[in-house]
Length: 130
Image (cartoon, rainbow, N blue to C red; front, side, top):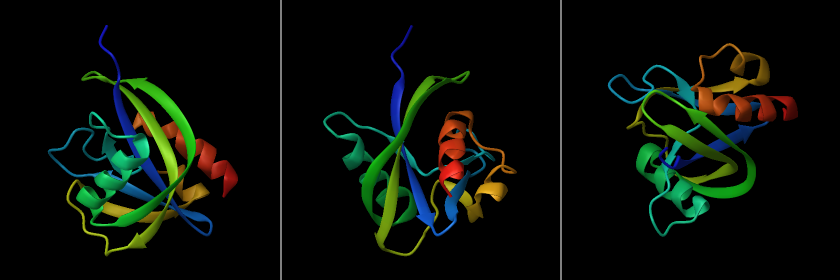
């Protein structure tokens, strides 16, 4: 069995809402909602990888804060180990390259979105804190 692909995701909180991003058509997991982020490259810490991914995917500079959770999910294409972190936008304007939509959602609204399976435990955890 192959080792899981290690990825990171950002949970941006604004009051009682979190930022959800929908994967664009043609991308892996297209149409599903997720916390933005991506793969950890060799030599990067999870926090460094997340800061880089947020810059690449959303054109944002962010402060990576506390870890929320780590989950493992096996998709038909790979096993993913997702670690999510609370993040704060430091600068930049949201520009989408990997997603076709974003929404700031409350805990109740988050429950109505079709989330990528690996993200669901983090959604449930953060929703209970909002």
